[in-house]
Amino acid sequence: RFIVKVICERLFVEGKISGIHILGRLGAEEAHEWSSLPGVKLIGQVPRDEMPSHFQQADIFLNLDVNAACPNAVIEAMATGLPIVGFRTGALEEMVPESAGALANYGGDPWKLEQPDCEDLVTKICYVIANLEELSRGARSVASAKFNPRYVVEKYRNILDPREKLNANA
Image (cartoon, rainbow, N blue to C red):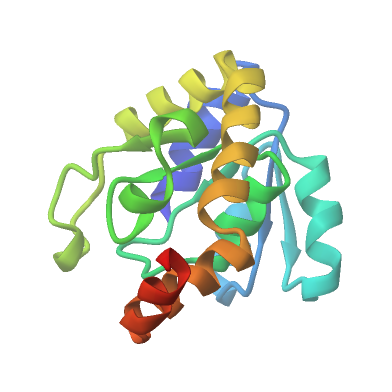
């Protein structure tokens, strides 16, 4: 929870960002704490069909999941051209190349949920803000190339039925 506070203190107060919109289910304690921070707007849970409009209002997608397996929201955000900022944990390192965003070193042990390196995260946010156009194009390109449904189906076919690969080459 302190990550949002650090980001607000370092980036909103200094005028480097205009605000943070937090989407998703929050506990009462988090909601109370975060709603009092300057620049924070709590949106709450959003129906899937409304996500694109929220993505269109944003400049970056900040994913603070630790050790996330393969978050669809990251793929969807990149597909709309949002660069990703998060920690270099879980599947994010495979999903988000340098051309599509910036990943911070966690610092502590993410499996023990030790305190992360917020300074590196703030640095990565500033980097993405400074390179927004280039990284937005990169995010969209990565989503189209790596997460295109036809491409994914073909990869699965090749893994699950090696004969498909042989037939395709014949």
